[in-house]
Image (cartoon, rainbow, N blue to C red; front, side, top):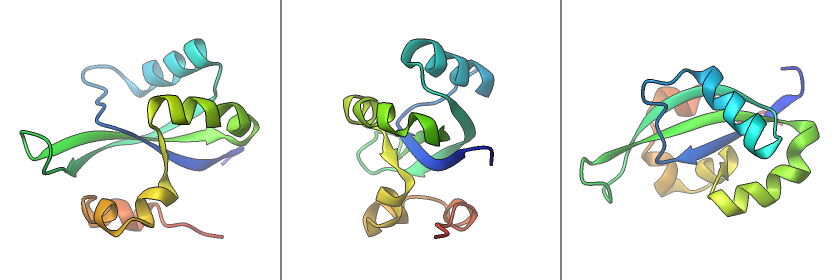
Length: 105
């Protein structure tokens, strides 16, 4: 996928009425990171008043992985594998999303 291989999760964020391109441009302009938006997912979350939250899934370009690490910790961005390896976290995601983004080594 043109160097976009690492899937990431920004939890508790929705695009709202914005387009995916706006999110990609914002990340590029503010953080100098190249991303490709994957999708917005509605996730079950007992801690939220509504019982669910929105998460944004996106790919980070492999050339930006080193710079991404600092940004990842500052903003609480997770790598997809962190979700999959945490049974409780993975159980909150719809089955079709888990199946769609399987890890292939």
